[in-house]
Image 1 (cartoon, rainbow, N blue to C red):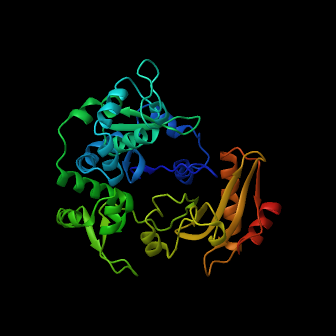
Image 2 (cartoon, rainbow, N blue to C red):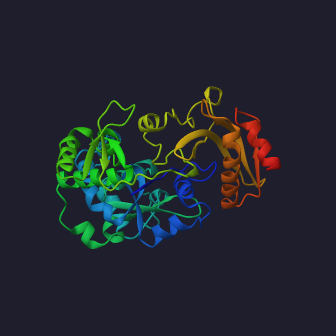
Image 3 (cartoon, rainbow, N blue to C red):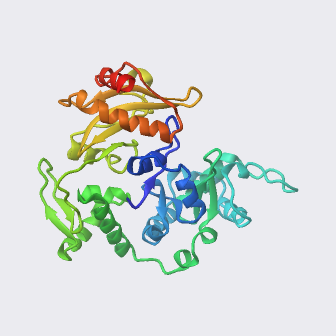
Length: 358
């Protein structure tokens, strides 16, 4: 995958954990924090906030430099009021890692430090600019910010910057490998690049034989197949997907590829939600066949299926048994003894029956 998008919503489990569960099944939940603490992964702003491996850092430095040179509107306002704030935060980080709350007040004779909101915004800006990297505190998921120069190998931070054009091309090369097949928009979105500067680089990758221009049935746009993409005779996948899984995070691609219209409804008022609060697409074989609204009832020891739906034309009985197996494995992974399906959605009757008697 190359990177894992991070999200803090924890009604079931945090998105980055679900992404691993989708591919590994029941696995130790400390894998990601252990990898971050060991320096194998760190948090940076790539496909929004993401866990990325060390070897990606040199290729996203040009994006970081752009953000440093042209701060966002919210950071520009902070700098207008406090022009020295970035230097002050960097000086504070020179004393060691910190969380945003540490900036609320300095302990000692200097008294009050600054308004917490300004400090938090400064840290977020520095994270986006690559001068700071982060990992997460285990007990409350708060970001632990550190100077990139302290956390990452010196050759990555202090070495010569890769020219923007070369970096963009490598990101497209990697995105193509992660996708297998994709349009220009798909490949650019993976690392949140603009499409205009990517277009001539795609042409170069085609000329060099790394990408093969292809037509995909039902796609209006030109597609590109990575030369090493595998084409299995059959796909026997079964997974519950996070709303921020790379398989579905670019909604336009999910619709083109699977005919699956997907909109996250976390921020939609409850009365206006169609499918539910935290809805996970259901992958079976090579199709997205349904969706389930899941919640971990930790106090009651239950994995709650608050609604379950199949896609048009998909028989509920063809999905219920496989989905029940996947839900039981997820409940096991989350240390929840029971799976309970609420009677909401066209898949709910068949799923409830399998969970009770299957």
